[in-house]
Image (cartoon, rainbow, N blue to C red; front, side, top):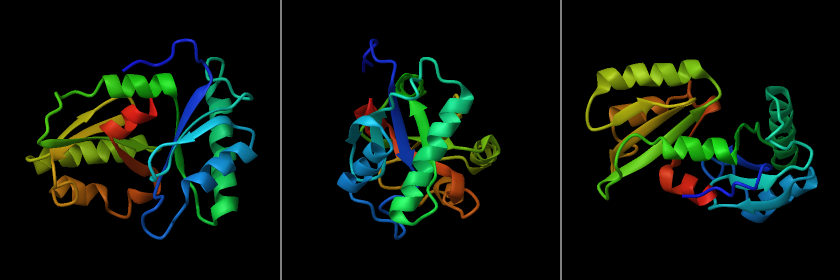
Length: 187
């Protein structure tokens, strides 16, 4: 996987809870919201709330936490206004996401589903990691830089004790999970 080294302005937004649980957003409408707030080179990936874009006003190479936070809030407000739901996103620079993907800790096989879990609350990731330590097989869970890596046998990503724990209501407002293959498509 390669990330264009010349690009310093590419962002990735991962929307939580899109096209599940009653929040339906068409990819063309989603892209239009990003364009309406000044984003360019907008591209949606799959129909599950993944957007790659540039924002000329917030080049990540020079962005501070404050400017990144302002961009995140601007996007969330635009989504809430356009689609009438309480929007929450993970906003990442493309290079940061590339590092997260590259750090995936296990070799990939056809028998497993590789996931990365993102949260706005480190305490939630810590709680899930602690739960995983007691839940045992068949899940593998490992911490990463602001994420949890999760691997589960194919076909059981909603059935294991860890899967059930991570889908509890207390985590839903600030946790989103993406398949590693989806993240590679975003890069």
